[in-house]
Amino acid sequence: MLEAQVAVVRSTTLLVLDEADVLLSLGFAPQLSSILGQLRPDRQTLLFSATLPPALEEAAAGWVSSPVRVYCETDARAAEGAAAAGAR
Image 1 (cartoon, helix red, strand yellow):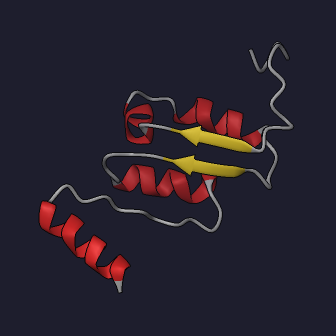
Image 2: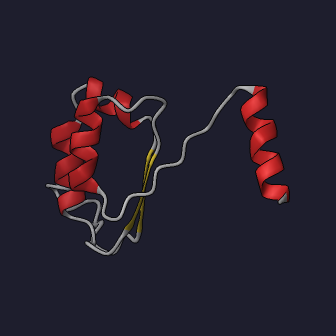
């Protein structure tokens, strides 16, 4: 679609990559790099992944600038600690 210029993505300002680890494990890195190369350099990129394998960390370094990592805990004690920290 991009090569046929059916989809013009140059004006995209927000990109969401969900399950990025799965996309890489399925071999979509070349396609993602191609798409990312056609987007605005000042876009906002949100990358979500349940795991952060070295290959994803390496790829993400080229896909995002000024990354911020957010870790989510499922442990109830961690959630209670976060709530207590927010109440301070």
